Image (cartoon, rainbow, N blue to C red; front, side, top):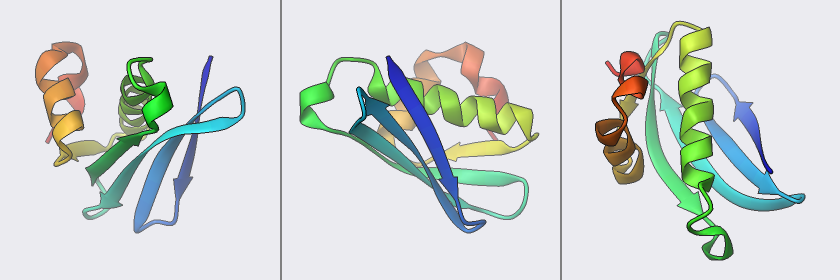
Length: 94
């Protein structure tokens, strides 16, 4: 099971993924005003590639945006491609 933890300092933040207590990946973002944030980087540890870690972090970001009425600007290639493939996530795009 993938556990996602969010960290935020009101300027930058991240969603970190853990599997069995081990860090599996991180998705970082930067706030662009009060109403939107930019996903700027996604990194998955090589040993966890292909296990849906990136997707789980993206879903956590989307759920956070929906819950707090925020919008996402996906500059990270992974996030951008994932939004293009998943129309059900696109409601949070700016």
